[in-house]
Image 1 (cartoon, rainbow, N blue to C red):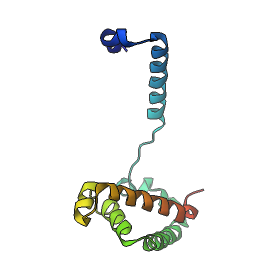
Image 2 (cartoon, rainbow, N blue to C red):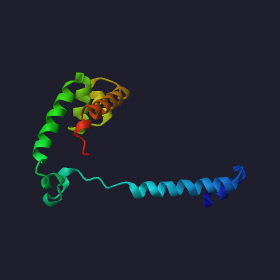
Image 3 (cartoon, helix red, strand yellow):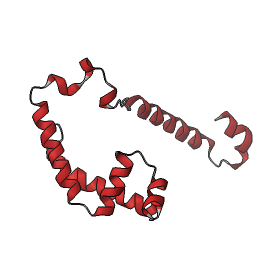
Image 4 (cartoon, rainbow, N blue to C red):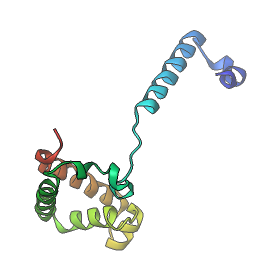
Length: 129
């Protein structure tokens, strides 16, 4: 705020409104940062922290989810499936996938969106309640 007032004070029409909006935005940013949870991949958790180990039905649900994932991926066109697998399993960037498959980065993005929507729809019954 101080930098803005020092450098651009003449360009502000309503400094009070600007200050109010700046404070509001800062509070919203702080709230968002506070509500973001740390995400730790399952393979990095200690055995005692692994959520699947405490549930007796975990193995059956995991097997069922894997089968549903295979069916859902199998229903996608080949290019969509390739983009998803290269990105999620192989760790390729979108640019690398585009080069490897001979398509544009924009097309890679569109395929990823399509796959995400498809998987969300097809696997919604497997989400925890």
